[in-house]
View 1 (spheres, rainbow, N blue to C red):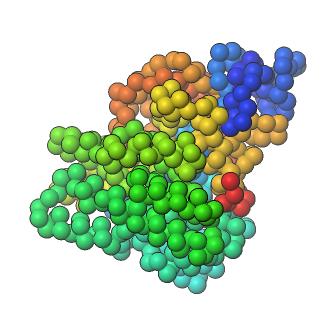
View 2 (cartoon, rainbow, N blue to C red):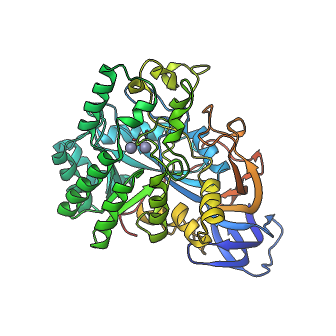
View 3 (cartoon, protein in one colour):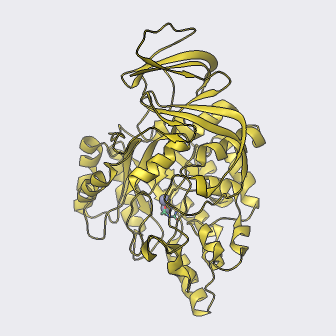
Length: 468
Ligand code: URP
Ligand code: ZN
Ligand code: ZN
């Protein structure tokens, strides 16, 4: 059925005006004043509300197996949670098992993503740069719509590649019109610090942060940029958390190098103080990179303002705090005896849009246009999804969020739709709330009511990445 959104204040990265939007057959058919429509149309009154393009979150780990753990959200639960938070497009990380080829990993990923309720694309994690892997990159970009690759400079023995492999992959990615995403931390030095701490009996969750200092992120970001510059390939730094890293990105962008970066809500709003929580509670905040001290936050806000940071994504990588009812494989409790065994990652897909609205627009005076840009338009452009996703215009997908900019509410994990059992932001009061969400014209969220269904999400074959 067609949908008509009446009298909303339409905000994109460049526009801000009041009009009606008619969505027909999944796409925006007409935008205009006082649209006159026939009978078979679902009407949504948006008077007093913002109408935003559906959020685009380009960093999630749904139904992901690691060497010791498994993320608790399926594509069904994770995308439902995303929709309730105003995000209608995800680009998720497809992570091969050790020894598995990327194309085989993508087949497995497709089986899992069949339950998605919003549209999803895939980044491919590369565990090596062997000839077979490099050979598959062209097929992934040109035939499978996977136009971005992630490599790890951290987690030695598990995910980390050496600089030569990173450089080789960057060159092939760049030549194929693909983006290289990098998890930038100096994994070898971190391992030395972790081994030292464990040997000294320093095993509480806070040592996760103390063994991954910001300088080692800054060093790796600088190194990744040098390699990308030499490879003449676009680079995207994922989950940037530290002032040193941002300084390296800023310096490179000022020289015209194609370096891009995202940060995440937890780095903007939380600090290493969380690691002082009593008992094992601090394990909830064990993600990589770790939370930094407060001083880094002003730098991140500066980066968002001056476009040295282009994107806020979530790195939604949820593990339960409790062992019950899902079992140890899904739980932070694995690390009760040592921080080194706590599964790394935290939830966030449902709270990104309202947190950034409250923090950026309400508290930091960011313009509504820039808010839309960093949460929808820029990620869609950088990852080959624009203009299908990330804006509101005739012909684009009818992914729309009706957002009340003044309603106050409080984050409660108990009211969330993820399968995870906690929120990093429990009890935080926000101004601005998602009221309705449409995915390709179909209303899937109406207040607290879920109207979508598992499997309605489509696979997004992305075009070339790395353009902004
Ligand atoms: O702690 C994190 N970030 N876990 C997810 C994997 C990654 O490095 O993005
Ligand atoms: Zn990472
Ligand atoms: Zn991640």
